[in-house]
View: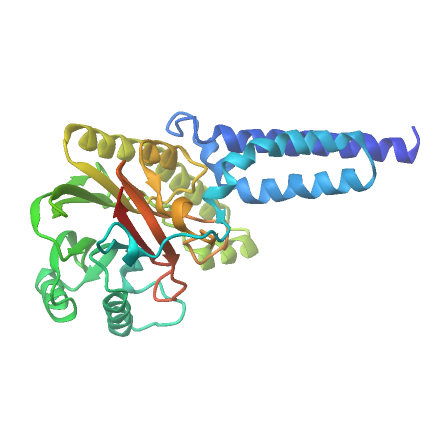
Length: 358
């Protein structure tokens, strides 16, 4: 066999493998990962696998090879998904000009216990910086995840001093190192509230009902199961080839992936039992190419898809692969602006959206 023929066969095999991986990324949104956990991993690889197929497409096209059809066909369905990761500028009406009244501003922000910033090491300094930023947002509703405090009294003091004019609802898990949980702040009147505690987990979904423009609206402030991994520790263990660390990491990943579908089921069951229209906000710990996002976004619009521009990634590491923080809107609301604020007070970026009634 000639060298050129061998190279051609090898290239086609690589293209078929890459195309197969691309198909698996599409299937990841449909397959329940509690049954086949590896499907979530394929979903996480959507961006790099798509870039690989795009490279192979250009490479084959330059060589006038008919094999370019393999990556081309593999990439065609990505047209339905790429908009969940990146949006291009479009002319949209300004929030204040809509329907004769101001839009509602919603913020969702995982503050990382005020201790995950790569720029601010002191807990108090980070907490103060987050509070200053949030006050500057002039938001009507603020959904915070992973809020940490010394105790409940300290949390109440923080809210009273830093967020005057806001009503706060929260649910905190307490332990020897203080308390942590979700906090929802709002300028609207609270008419009902509750929490969905996830079995065997410190994560939760806090819900609050408000009267907005004469209608009752429910806000779910969600923090779904995280992987619990430290990137510096992963890098260190790769270098040292720590097999025990990799075994434990695999178990953590499996546990996180298989828990999230059950947590999604609990949220959707609660939504179905309520007559109130629901916003679903928070840190899902899953990308748009996931079973989690697919189920929670059904029947709801995505503020980034409707009104965002540029890359939608909300997690600072491995940018722009990881978009895991969302604001999902019920039927008769629309997003008129969406911003991801690249501030380094946490390992997450805050999401700010202006929404209006259709």
